[in-house]
Image (cartoon, rainbow, N blue to C red; front, side):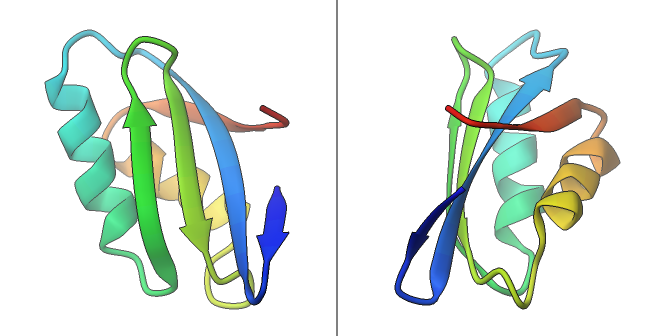
Length: 78
């Protein structure tokens, strides 16, 4: 995680990407969460970068949102 002012950037690694529509599903699910300001999903590397307010949404909350749309994710250092 990287802290910038009051926001934090959390990087997740996901499993199970099979097509570009996976990107849209994850962006919608995570991006709809209160406290999330930016979501970028890298299809080729299965990396998810999320800028969020850590007091509103935790890394575990982000992982749960990814799981809700059918993918397994875990926090990653890069």
